[in-house]
Image (tube, chains in turn brown, blue, cyan, red):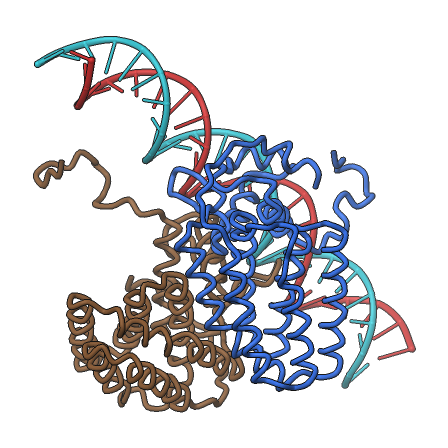
Amino acid sequence: MADPSVQTTPTPPRQQARADAVADTLRRAVLAHRIAPGTKLTEDELGSALGVGRTTVRDALRALAHEHLVEIHRNRGAFVARPDKREAVEIFEARSLLEPRTARSAAERASRTDVAALRRHLAEENAAMASGDAGHAVYLSGRFHVQIAHIANQRTVAQFVETLVLRSSLIIALYWQRPSAMCECHAHDALVDAIAARDGARAEDIMSGHIVDLLSGLDLAERPAGTVDLAKALSGL
Amino acid sequence: MADPSVQTTPTPPRQQARADAVADTLRRAVLAHRIAPGTKLTEDELGSALGVGRTTVRDALRALAHEHLVEIHRNRGAFVARPDKREAVEIFEARSLLEPRTARSAAERASRTDVAALRRHLAEENAAMASGDAGHAVYLSGRFHVQIAHIANQRTVAQFVETLVLRSSLIIALYWQRPSAMCECHAHDALVDAIAARDGARAEDIMSGHIVDLLSGLDLAERPAGTVDLAKALSGL
DNA sequence: TGAGCTATGATTGCCGACAATTCAGGATGC
DNA sequence: GCATCCTGAATTGTCGGCAATCATAGCTCA
């Protein structure tokens, strides 16, 4: 069935729905902090910048609004979400409810291939951090948490963790004190070790402390929002 | 039905957007089991049945898909979600991670007005159950859980609980063994008592057992999906 | 001079139409 | 007879346009 030589479909490698592609582009731009929180996202502006119609942009904005990465006010438009101190605390409290016990389950269920995948992921993460790409490092760090939830075989929890991780990334981009020194990599190392040892209790403890550390590493000073040129911010993608 | 030339408010207050109204209508129809799980939701059909355009229906379907009440397959359409056994178990496991400790926080924070509101809600719930309106009773029962999360002052957790409760309602409508005998009302009574007594530990225990009871009250036999006439199913709304 | 009101401009909400894609049925070849 | 291919219909994905709504700027008046 698989025919590597001839592609019967003349369309580019993979015709991904435009709305999803636009949502993905915007998501990365928001998480990489290329668009400042509070920025207004005009449909026409985004559409012309990305070469798609207004309806497509609209769908993407609705999707991101569901993830709380943008806020939509009726008849007023969409704005990049600007999580405040309270929301930041709430998100990490929700994570501390979900993730520690999920890590315990993951440790008790993890197969050899699961552990190997985690180790591979961790290496990639460290490489990104070593190369100085903080944005990508934060992204991979989040995927690590999602991966653990998947190893625990909890899709529903994994989806919650995924949205929480995305919002956490935005919060970290906003309020992180020391962008360069991320102490968390050691926590991830220790987590993988605990999971590899099938030590559920230790994995739960480490995860619990890790989330507390993440929250306590934040600086909750409010920052004013600036305006940026959307076309320029999205040009590199 | 609505004549654009007449000024007599075709829709009650104009403050709610069409898409949200359509989403609400569909949500209630799905939760009340007026539309069987697995049913295809054609955009044109829904649009003409509800008197709105296809774009509006589309937005509503996207919103419901994000709540996992409908599933959208690319280029194939939207279908009413049919949660399987695994998903049911996962959802109640997620609830058992979130809700017990949230109930503890609620008990420790609840004010007198909070307790009074819970008692009012409980009376309404019992009234609905006594009148035999099982669908409304299940809905109110879910709102009770959401209200507790709000008393705990956790908006983020409350939103997760809200979606979990909605999905639980769909699961209950699908798999509940004894539609008439809902033993859970006693659990809710006991919960309010524990919260009123500011007994966090007891509230946590009760909530934990309550969720286990809900799951164990399910019958996991798979049921085939039938086809219904959408226009007729939505006519009463 | 400051506050309140009005008019203008810009942007969203909603709609129908066109093109792209998928699914079903029938025809064809082995 | 069975599998494969082709063709047709139906539905979704996407687009631009029109009306409704909101924010802003200017004007009037105390």
